[in-house]
Amino acid sequence: MSSSTNIVTRKRCAVYCRVSSDERLDQSFNSIDAQKEAGHAFIKSQSHEGWTALPDDYDDPGFSGGNMDRPALKRLMADIESGRVDIVVVYKIDRLSRSLADFARMVEVFDRYGTSFSAVTQQINSATSMGRLMLNVLLSFAQFEREVTGERIRDKLAAAKAKGMWMGGVPPLGYDVINHTLVINEPEAKAVRAIWQRFVELRSPSLLVRELARDGVKTKTWTNTNGVLRTGRPITKQNLYKAFRNPVYIGKIRHKGKIHEGLHQAIIDQPLWDAVQAILAEESSARISATMTRDSPPCLLRGLLFAPNGDRMIPTFTRKKKSGGKHYGYYISSSDTKFGHGTNPVGTIPAQPIEALVVEQVIAALQSPETIQSVWDEVKRRGLGIDEPAVVLAMRNLAVVWNELFPAEQVRLIRLLIERVQIRDDGLDIEWHAMGWSGLASELAPNSIGAELRDMEEAAA
Image 1: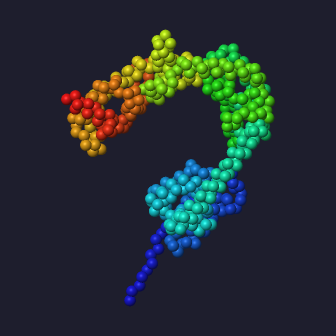
Image 2: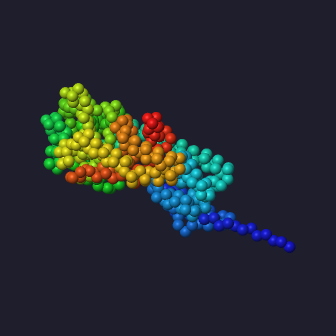
Image 3: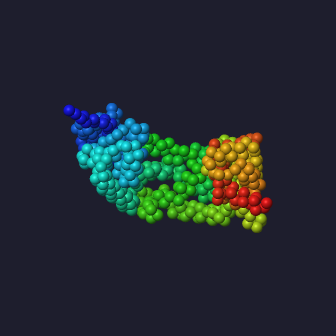
């Protein structure tokens, strides 16, 4: 006589709940508690299949389903990847995601780690092919609903701005917001008029920001819709340019490139607006003629060079007519670009000498035995099929022909090898990329610079 026993495998179930910030938390079918209760009841009804609820739930109150930037969801995905979850249970599939692309990525992770998915109210199980079909159909409708809602919101916003209403964002200095309408804040408005008038007199944003910093004039201090106080900051040249081009100060509202009459009063009159715009147009024309175009050679140390105080050094160029239109490169600190020349004591640094110093150290490193050994070890580890003499030859040749490389190629190799170039009072400090020399091994593979250098040497022989 024989008997058989059906062994039920234990399945660990995670209950995920979500409520958007625009959904009413007091509605029973949307509340976190209701979703959680329904999820646990559903798991209990499947206890004969071995379903058991994990002790910890995953709750995201006040988070949109349109993206995956949710703390509980991130924790759930991490637990799935750690092998702690067998089944994900939700009230409805749109609680997990309203984006078809995001959901597809989730399902891919589910499949990779053997996790299935069930929705309480829709009787869907991703473990079956029919369940997968229904999931995709329902999620497509959820995404369609979300996109239609977004279009309605955008249309409503455009219609409101066309009527001259203020529809959110940081209020401009000189105004407060009351019932979607900008109302003049007279003390701030007086400062705004003074700023515009002073710009016409100075014709220099750099001089103006220095005066404003000296007088303690700052950007708008305001409280956002969440009740968080945003204090004003020192006014930069970028703040000035943005304000000078903002038609809100002459009583208008800009939306999607169109200008509409606003419901608010103007702070700046039309003649003063026109005078400022004329100065900006003149300055812009002069800047275009004096600086390099997009066709200019790439900057060797763009994004890598830093002043002694930590300011990033920004590349800039001038063209001198007396030299036949020759271009000259410089590096200027980011604080100087914001608050005018002289803000950072490092001043303006000619590009050629400092770039030459960096290249000199790169070439010395390429020829050092320690570096060559590191690259050769990486070549062996990757199995690139290159022998040691070829590695030594290619690296030495790279140092020799550096100046013959295209500027763009020099920039690429510099970025491969260098993390940061720090200006010191007594010289330069170069921080090498931790994996830079290992990355250089790839340059020795076929169809690379290193391969071309080896070919050049063999041809010469």
